[in-house]
Length: 130
Length: 279
Image 1 (cartoon, rainbow over the protein chains, first blue to last red):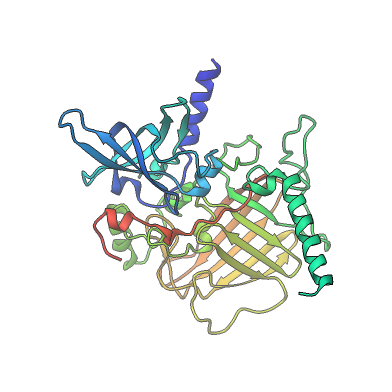
Image 2 (image 1 turned 135 degrees about the vertical axis):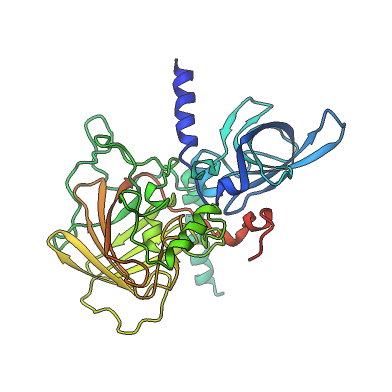
């Protein structure tokens, strides 16, 4: 029960987030993607943090570098993140909305650390969808 | 550096070192740092309905960290610092008006254009400052620092500020337009009445691209009925942009145990690049 309540609260939290830009213009909420990859770069910057991960395309065997857009530092710090919550080489799973332009770009909604199973909200700007 | 000054310097350095070691919070962000003077209920929760803080003059003290109040009536908790909401007025200030905002004919197609293209030309996206009316509804903390003769509003977004003078000065006669305009205030009972003019032509008020022009006059009537809430009645008189004067009342809710954290948008804004647009 406690887990269900926690998930419910996390869901509510994820709906009340930053709104720097026009989310629906850039991302398609109907194109939900789940990725698993290795962190290759981190830009801890405003107004959005970007995390880059190398993802193996099992169909082609190629490795694709995906960009993950998160909320800004103040938002993530308030969500409990630290600058070093993720490190280069970490393996993570991410769920989010894909960019409409077809590029390997995702607006991340949550990120799970493979090593610990810890799931963290990513400060998605999905709330501003209109 | 002579010996005396040298000893003084190292004494100071030792004190600083000891202070930092003894205070782990000195290393961390000030998220969760307890706000002073917060009225509490017996169970430790914040008493949002506690009496209004007051200045030495007896007038309400509007100081505090504020964010849009979107809670249902009857819910009386402060806003969590990790849970900053966006006001529905940010979609369009006329959201509660049956006919919408009374746009002049020239402004109607502009608002329609911005609505249709999902506001991709929004100045906010291009990291330009938000006018104070818009700032009331965005998910960025505002900090009111209120003294008897001056109120400063700090905005963590783009490290912005606004000055409201309560020192008896009159508004300038021919102001050079600016992002926040020129604001002077007086008290009407316990309500702070702020008059603002001199805002830049074409300043956006919401995601729809509702605008205010250089002719615009904004009146804010701000009251703090209790510890935890602000009511802001906004009246916009801008005959260049609107066919009639319009008013809305905004609600703000206190945030405790939090602090402003800079968000300088130009640091790494990528939306324009991702959209293959140009500045």
